[in-house]
Image 1 (cartoon, rainbow, N blue to C red):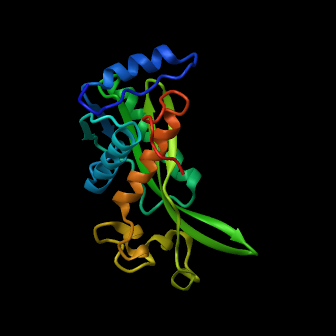
Image 2 (cartoon, rainbow, N blue to C red):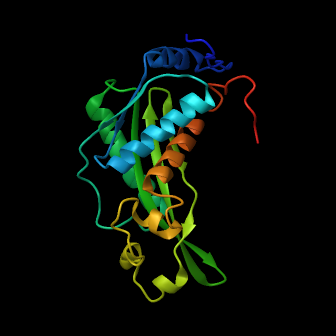
Length: 214
């Protein structure tokens, strides 16, 4: 253990043995297989892992993300959170079955458009979802949502929504275009991944001692 590092506290739980064994495997570094060859998704997953393990747990472990072939992308974005999560779960489970215990974590991240009905009007939002599979379970996490400007999508069919905002094919994608660069595909993927890790290890690993909350 390096100076200043704090080992995570394993909490009392029936899964303690599995968690302890899994954590022991991580001591030399975290290796994650990602169902994508997109540099923005790969870097986003890496950012999320670093945020959780280094900032959340105070562990300076190396993190590596390994791209995996992904031939299952539909044309355009999924038109619901449920559709996006189903797609990500299908990809990550297939990857985990194919690769077995070669990696510590298996991650798939997908964007999603979701309609929210407010006073009879559909308000469309965009967010990213990450699904993580590991020996200690499966968890999902989402990013913050951004609304598509109503004036740009008025009268459009659902399949046209993702292409209604100018500049969506540039780096950062639709999220970057909607926020003027404040957020992008990478940062949304990172947030979704860190949130999924928080759920995956909730009640198993505690945050580092003395960490400020709230």
